[in-house]
Image 1 (cartoon, rainbow, N blue to C red):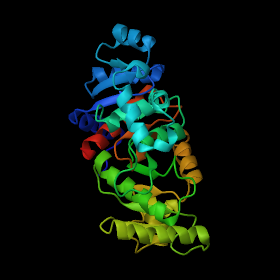
Image 2 (cartoon, helix red, strand yellow; image 1 turned 45 degrees about the vertical axis):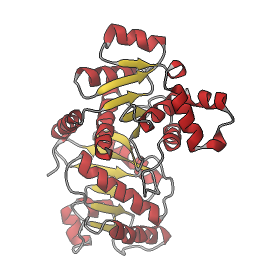
Image 3 (cartoon, rainbow, N blue to C red; image 1 turned 180 degrees about the vertical axis):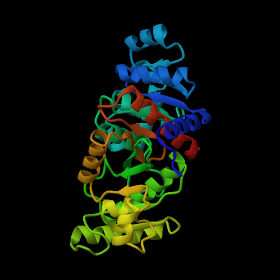
Image 4 (cartoon, rainbow, N blue to C red; image 1 turned 90 degrees about the horizontal axis):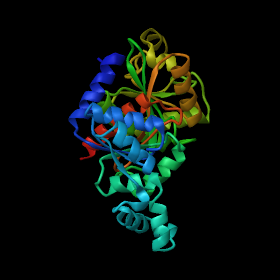
Length: 329
C-alpha cells in the first residue's frame, strides 16, 4: 500500500538521508533556496552547498554554518567545467574565454559539477524556467544511456489517499506514441525508487478502450503497445478515461478486463497541456501536495523547480534528486 501524506514525506526524507549525498543548490541568492539549504543541513539530509556571491557567504556565516558556499566565477573548478562544456558541445563555444563565461552561469556550473562528480545532485529553477534548467542539464550531463526522451513528473499527495504520479507535466509538449511510452517507462522506474510501491500505469484519454476514435486516441493505443514491449512486467492499459483509471466501480463498468483500470498509480497524460493543467488543478482545488517537477531520464540528477516553489518544496525535490543519485551510483 502507498503511505498517506505524512508517511510518504517522512519515508522519502529518511531514505534520502540514508543516501548520504552531496547536494548543490544553484540559486543561493534566493531566500527560499537559502531556507531550504539550512533545513537540509540542519536535518542532516545531505551535505549541502549553495552557489552565490558575498551576500550568500555572509548569510551562511551568520545563519547556516553547515552550508558551504561556492562562487562560480572565482571557483577553482571553473576551468574544469569550461573544458567539459567545450568538449560536449564544441560548436557552442568560440574560445577559452567564451567557455569560461558560459561555465560561470550558475545552472551550467552546477550541472557541470554534478557531471564531474563534485556533487551528487543539483536543484535549480526557483528563479529560472524549466527550459533554462533543462538546457543546462542536457549540455553538462546529457540523457542517460539508452534514453531518448527526457521528461518530468509530479508526485501528487492527497491526505488519506494514494500518491499518484502525473507525467509528463513540464517538458514534452506534444509527445509521439514512442515518447509517451518512454515517459511512462521513466515514471515507472522512479516510482519504485521514490514511493516504494509497484507501478500500475494508465495512459489517459477522453476515450476508454474504444468508446471514441480519432488520431489522438490511436496515438495513445500505440503508446500502450510500445510500453508493453519496453516493460512487459508492469500492469498497464489505455486508452483510459481518468475515472476508469482510478475508480474501481467505474473500471468494472467501463473496462472490466483491464490490468490497470481502477488501480492505476501512474497517470500518463496525452500531452503537456493536459498534464500541466491537471496537476495544478489537483494541487490548487483538490488541495493535494505536488512534489516536483522531477526531471527523469538524465544521466545524473539535475532537478527542476516551479518558480512558485516554497522552501519546503525545494527540500522535497532535493530528497528525490538525492534518491535518484543514489540509484545511479
